Length: 203
Image (cartoon, rainbow, N blue to C red; front, side, top):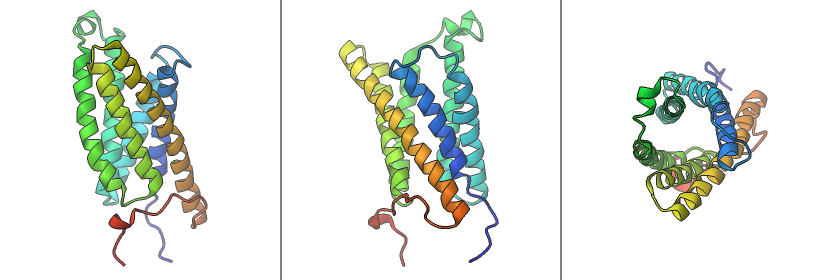
């Protein structure tokens, strides 16, 4: 077998995604309270770890992985900054100019790019595909719960976002762990599921 010249950064990116969504979902589900202790995980795991993984994927020539990890890394940088603004960390002038609907519009933008990435993920493996499906559901939940003024819809879509985020965390832990062990043992130690046949590489 040819010698590997580049390590696969996917496990780092998936671990970062798993950690931040696990902690963030605990707050959405009411298991924890507040944002202060979510922010470090958002910055260092959700943002930095995924961004680094994305840059390394770009260096390997992996446009899909580089775009996905960098895009979501930047999302968590922006989200953590928005939380800091809302908490008054940058002063009362910025805090008093907060309009949550702008965040809702950003969620719609991320839903759009995620739908494209979901199609692309069908050519990778089934675990990654279902991670993207739940990211789609997360952004649908976040968009509607942020933009609607109907309390019942706010609660329903908030719960959708919460459970979708928890599923992202669980699948990402498995995907990251499988990536590490499969590369370490140089065989399929934990299955990830083959690509969908329609998008499988031609033999």
